[in-house]
Length: 364
DNA sequence: TGCATTTGACCTGA
DNA sequence: TCAGGTCAAATGCA
Image (cartoon, rainbow, N blue to C red; front, side, top):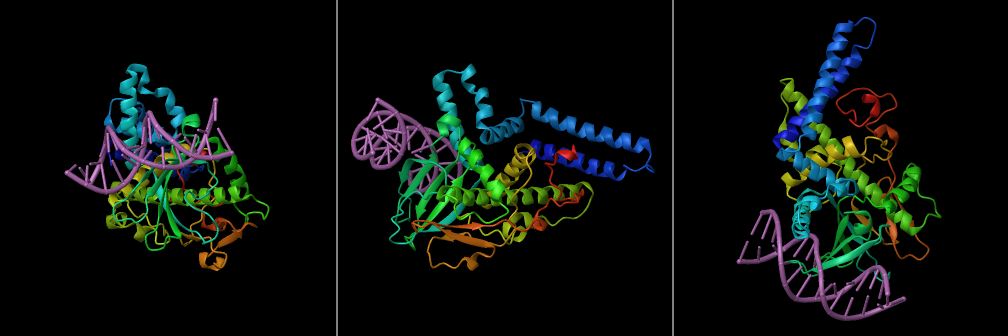
């Protein structure tokens, strides 16, 4: 990870810690000087952070901007390099940027079992509109891998992509790797419905697309929640370092140690890449993107990532998950219901503990 | 005619 | 150097 990014995170973390202290001093017995000092330190910490973000020259800044651009393509479209380069250069730079994004975009994998006779082949319906843009024979794989991207890529700059790979062992199983977050409007529109219904099982009348989409969003949210946990873990580590506490860092090298319940088989991701990307993405998404929205879903449950569409598959295999089958029996989605709110890091009585979500506006 | 898919070429990173 | 990922022209389809 970039040193400057680490410094930036430390600054923000320090600000958070100072705010925590300030909160403890928000009683009549505390001196005004102490509070003023803490406020000054908090402001200084955030000013430093902002100046780092505003500084366009540093490598960390540009990489952070890249990251932000990945998540807010429509916003960053206005800052296109077209303004000061030729079309050829622009195309070239965009092309290079695509390859750069390969490494930095979040991704998670699901396995989807397709029953024989369902007629379901190729791209699996998750509620989004995907357009196939490529197919490639993969070394050692019996079946080619299909590459799909969001239909609204050009219209709305949505950078979400997915790869569909048929399993060698069981051709009825498709391994679907999602990359990037949907920023297109179909996401937000359906997301409202999903968020509104996230605390209850999907209604029987819910369309297949919405249910599939709900499943997709829930998986995406799970992925992000895990990111957030890891982010908090690293921040706690930073705290420990600052306070001279000894923190076992090897946990950071083993995601399963940290998140034993997280069962996505991130098959082809190098561990270091996962850590870095998850942390950066978590930091950006949780502290910038999600700053103005509460966390509706926090399924911190142990759950298999194996999503069977077999009608005979027992829903109890998925813990809190439940199965919904369409009348056509073409595709059954296993949708994991969110856990009770007690599992959420955001409690009713919010307290500034190290796990406090950094994205709460009241904090500022 | 417009949109989606196919497929060979090209680019990047390991 | 090669495998994986993406582009874009050609093609198919409604």
